[in-house]
Length: 156
Image (cartoon, rainbow, N blue to C red; front, side, top):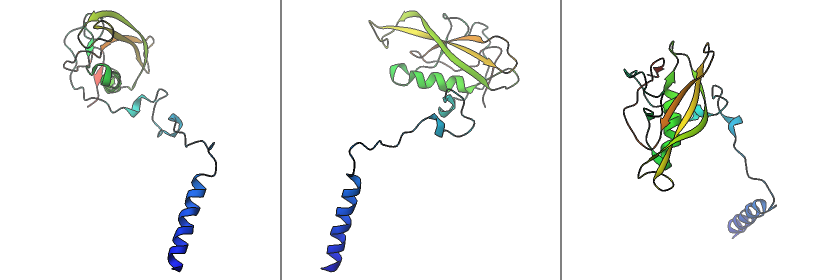
């Protein structure tokens, strides 16, 4: 009987400790807890695709008519864009930085958001030694073979 009494008081003590304050803030998790090496946009938390080849087409990724097609749609498209951008390297295998600039160039697709219309995302991409960023166009609504645009290399 003595052991059950202690067990009961232990359970009551745990419940009381958990209910002490209804205003207690839960633990917060932020980018400050990321390992060193994560860039300022925390994009390195998304594992990169493997991109081994460079496109033969000089317009690949550089025009809205020939965007990089990462696929994924509304559910995984943004993650796929980050995975692709994290796989790119500069011409001497420099790490790249990127920033989403806008969306443009509406087109019809059954995966579109409003009235089967989707947009292409536009990114400014740069690396150490690059004076002006490069503009890349990425389509997350259609998939395709992933290649590095001319002037880039890919992560291996």
